[in-house]
Length: 600
Image (tube, rainbow, N blue to C red; front, side, top):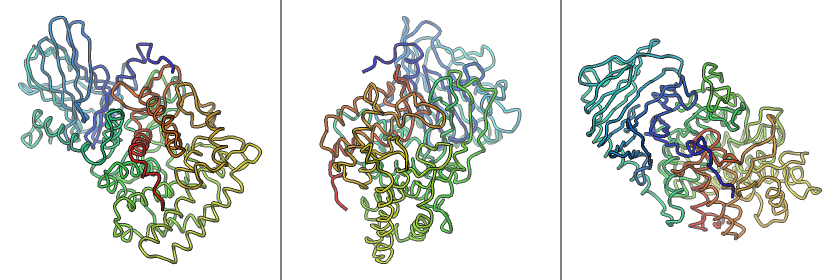
């Protein structure tokens, strides 16, 4: 295993903290809030230091004197504790996002003096503003372009040093930073009594997260850290007002430092969300899974392709047009910094299959036949579209932006869509549709077996006529398309292990794409590989993969999209829904083999 985290930069990357309240989020590093979009996940950010060290803005707390810092979560929560230790005493800062509002609370208890520096920069670091002080209460920052602002209510003994910088005396208190779209409705106005009090909010927020972790299946102590983290991240990425679940809470954290693979992931991808639904169902969170299904069901166009687009904003509308924020230097000087995502305009024909697999998993777990019956029109429409379109070329799961091809994984997901729809039709008594869709599934499978497998290479290939493989081929037995012990798949697995598994036991998603070579392993397919090993009866190999991914996570068990091969640092947007869903899948299956041994 590579010795990771030798440089100071790598150590810092591995100490990132994720805070969420189901409305928006924050990232924290070394006691500093370095990312905070408001009022919701996909809004412009007020603190953006993670995207520009100098111009991004942040909210920092630290003792005056030299210190060491230990950061942890309160057990089973997304409430963080920073304990600073100096030669004269300790400072403890408890950071969390209260439920129901776009704000951050920082409750402190200190035996030493310390400094707080609050420097918001509106609209992704574009607009600076000065603090306006409210006597005995704190201060606020007002945008120069709108009525929005950030108010900071303060309790404690402090004095003002300059614009947003405070010097605190030892004692107890808090800082409550709340975003307002209109400052006339904020915490310094007549309506202030309706807003949360920090100590009560801390208690309620802590209780909320602990109760979420308690729901559903329990696992052995060996896997508890990464398993619990994966539950919290998955639920922390849900936009609770609508039920949408985003792929990641950040934009433009680079897949490769210094290069241009920098994307905005703060939207719901049908594929990512569907995979999360399956994972949540498997671990006993059926209620949250149904909320995500409800949101996706509301997006289906029954007169055309089921999902017209592969991703949506968290209110169900289109995300903003992809554009570059040229005034930001980028994370580790990786440009461009992008907002919006042009993949919105791709036609991705695997989305209906991912959704149908999730819907079927929900039905199998809950036996909620009325839900399927109530939404039968949408299931019919998706199958009608696949019947007309499955033979067409498409983009793939990795959203390559070159010419469409006949990708094997995409074809298999179209098989999944009609196969699962046929099974649901049987369960609720639609015999005619069950027969039609079963026949269509057989037709698609025959096409894949004829065109997607290379006898010369003894493996399935990435797309028809290709000599390449990609990690998405691991899903063939996971979806039940082919038996895991079938020689055709075993030959594919052997090639995948040879071509794509790298040092540290993690997996590349492919060797190269339209932008060049893949530099770092992709965490999601690494979980697929572990699930395949479980089905082959190779539990030790699966456990080793979980161990490797746990080592590749941050100090707080947070997983990124990619892992730097040299340093083990998180790469890509962070934390990422896909690998956390994958971890829930593989650990749940390891603890309960009936989840993958059950027969339809």
